[in-house]
Image 1: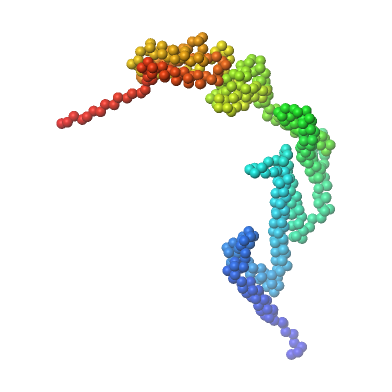
Image 2: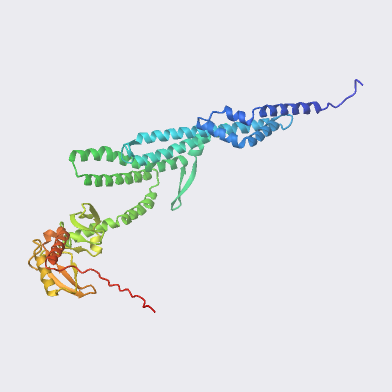
Length: 450
């Protein structure tokens, strides 16, 4: 009996494992849902969000906890190392993402504070092209935090990236460019990034030249602001194109200059075609003189006014209500233009159409209208005012009164026409006449009695 071999029963181990699982499940179920919700503060956004998650998904969270307890028990599931690895990786990844995102938002807010300032109503740039620098800085910060986050997350999951492997990734010649004639050029990713870095460097050099060279020169010479702005803009873009071209030549990619310079020149010519038309139209206006400063012109109901200046780009028109219109020069060559002052001898006021009842003597009306127009001191005697019986209408005689004034009073033509209308109304009433009004006679027929 003492020498006999007996197989050890596994029942005690199973009962012990089951006992341990039950104890941990009971400990997990010990705090009720209401106890957890009452213990959590809700004043901060994080705990308020956690409170809502527990309130909505408490049952699912409890079942997941029970599953993790069962799977992590060495006597039942035996996946304790795997579960610990997954929990460590998932929780650590979420923490890294949250921390890096908070740092990114902090840097983003501070970069906006550095590049912009508030005037109480809106944000304004501290210097030229601050918006461009802000956009570039946001992209660089985003790429930097993505790179750092990838390194930290890889280390957290047990897959660290060494500096040597990173250097090999960027320094090994991986790209091949066909230069033509059987010539190939190999590039590393680091060299490719350096090539792309030429573009922001070109804009930065252009900004330095404009801010610290041209600005100081123009501040001493006291040049017109329009000329200053034009020269600064042209110099800025010429500097940018020059720096990018030299950078590509230095990188051995001079053949790319033809690829971007040709489309660039074509795009500039296409974009400046309207400016070229305006510039040519400017010389046509100066030679033919269809309009000149002081003329009152009209192209449409919206585009009309007195010419205040003629520049190589546009014509400035001043409306009667005080505001100005900036009209491109080519419109005065391509469209029909009404010019009140093209004839230097006289201009015509707006025609006055008036309806007189048929009961009045047209000869007497003609004399009254003629004298009313001639009494206006702003109306020319030569040519004399024109009064004409235009037509016979249903309401009466339709007369036309046309007055002529000197070109110097072009802008006053509407006031002169208004004064003439008032004088006509007064003269008609003094002579027992009036303006015709619609009259309708309504007859009511009563039904005859049976």
